[in-house]
Length: 71
Figure 1: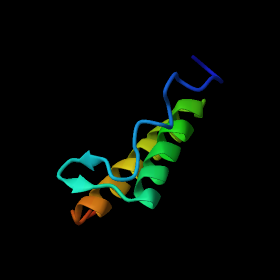
Figure 2 (figure 1 turned 90 degrees about the vertical axis):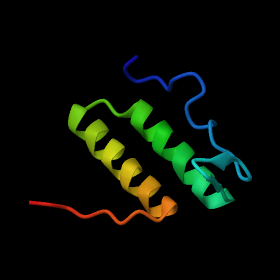
Figure 3 (figure 1 turned 120 degrees about the horizontal axis):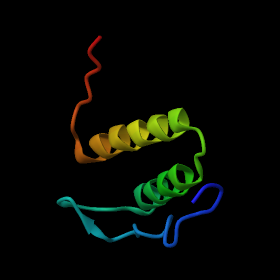
Figure 4 (figure 1 turned 180 degrees about the vertical axis):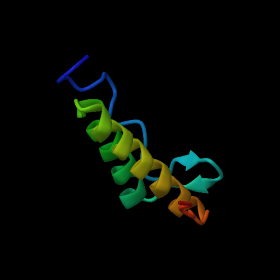
């Protein structure tokens, strides 16, 4: 599905949504949706990997998990 946005990409999260034990605010929901849009648009495998890592780190941040880079 190169060059096209996946059906539903960018609208899975919304403010007030209960997600992983927290209630998402407007900014968090918007950021998660934007990550999904960007990931679905990424054409280079490196870009997709980088975006997925950034989304994972953002999720850890909003869940209060400290991310430690090793190496």
